[in-house]
Length: 445
Image (cartoon, rainbow, N blue to C red; front, top):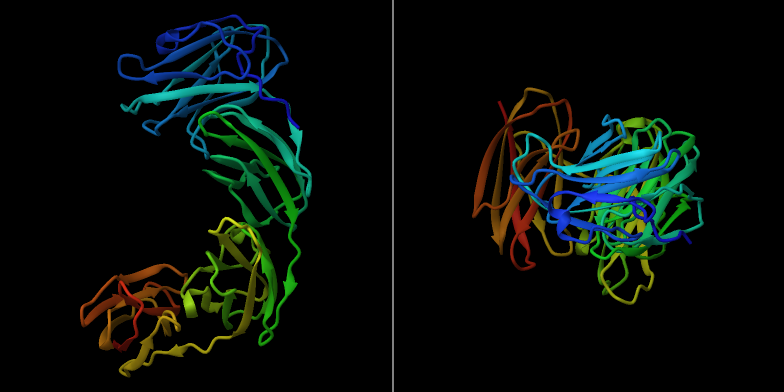
């Protein structure tokens, strides 16, 4: 286990403080945090410390109530800025890891950007850096003893490997950068962040850090585990059990342009929420991003993706995820099924009738359109309780139209932005779960 992080201004350093921090004791000891206030009257707070050549350090500044953008500067013994940073991916200003170039007096300046007029309370903490190695299947554990406290680590990744990570701790954030310095993982701050499916983009040593903003700090644990996909074929459902924060991953092959439907169901009386994701990791633009996602549009509020239109030939990855809202932490049974899509295609001038029930979920229809075409779409309530809501998604899964409620009927005129398959969704906007019968008409010209 890692020893508690030493504060950047370790006990061996002599320190002078200006500004609001002078209200506290002048001395600093390992594991303490300084609090202050940035305002128009006091836009900067400075720390001076005696640094030693070769010591690798970090420091963070955290705006307690997120009232302003924190900014930190580190000045060397000659007064030259060694590093300057404002709010990073995790919402704190981070200096380092940085190796001090010489013995002498260093100055750490806590402030805000020149363009920002807001101010507020902040805390500053830091420590000496002892880089740790994160290994697959071996938890990295320790104590982050103050808001902004950070542990740094390296991880050796292999290109195209599938990994998931879990954490335990309060108000944690996790960052991992590729060997080339690009963002690979950034997640948080919240309690026990996790991501069950990540596609490693390149081989080499990754740089990472785990941080907390919890008042009083938190113990933490970070674990990376390999993900082993299971092939799934159309017409053959697969099942298993799943725990909170984890994922089961399946693969299937598809030709470009083929339409699919995916359905997942979970055990009876489940206190939680499941969802489906589809990924295609062998194209760089899809690393870490889902091609399709759904949590609750299927029968019984279960996840359903339809249609999924395969953008290219190749292998696709299906992740079944679950968030457990109960306190028992017991695994939950699930089943996932893959099948060709049976989606009804809309024909211009021909109205279709449908019904949305609590068991059926959202009704979906497809339409193949061309860029620049103008269509008119009318959705009409026929019978039942509630009101029809209409959404339209482009061939690139962008929201083109969203109508939250229409009392009886509504007509929309839309110019299509792209060539390709469009998806219409009709739902029942109701405070209660009721049946709703509707009609949908698409017209052109």
